[in-house]
Image (cartoon, rainbow, N blue to C red; front, side, top):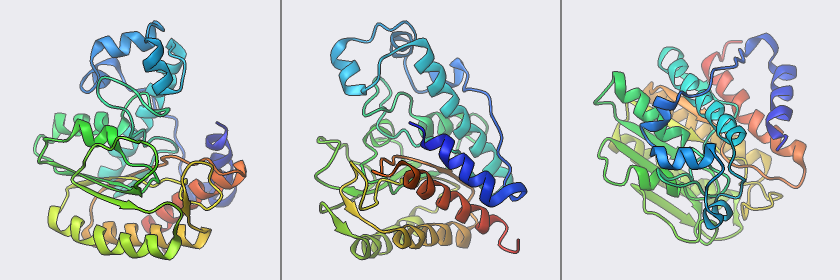
Length: 281
């Protein structure tokens, strides 16, 4: 997918020196192994993943795929560290929420959020983390990894009858009808997310934003327009800012029929995050 390159280009043109874009190292094997068993990682590295698992993943296993995925996780680790210092930071990728500990699904190879939470716990063992998932698809892998963890709250607002067909319950799932309107989506988000944030009171937030809610997305099955994305972002960022909660923002999915529009939707969220960090500029 070229959305990553396109979105970076938009950000460099529109934000310039007001936005610092870094190239972090890939996640180390020891960091990855905190979540994913060696047998799964080795099957990716050596291309020995069986055919059924490869079909479910949607990508051919290889050392290069593992390297690319480790780089994506490295971006989330870097954004997590930056958020602890600056309050808000973004990975210009990430949000691979369909990956379970022992298997990848739906183009998600490694679960970057789970690995980042494990890394946080190495220095902050009692930290309370919240995953706010506003991607159009349920974050089933993240839900599964943290199903019995009282210090991780997983919130997912998504289309109920869409991929994944078999849902894995999270702390709070908000399933919506297919082709939900932008206004109805925002009403449900406002009715459910603020109270969840207040009740759980997280020490750190991972926000998987998602660009696949747009009416022209190929897979999202929602009907949001660009202005609904802006309203969504303002709502989430307002909650984060009012509670002074460090937050790492991740791309999630986006498959618009207009590939440039996918990139612009992702970049728009990042630009709104930058404005929330430095509104006076």
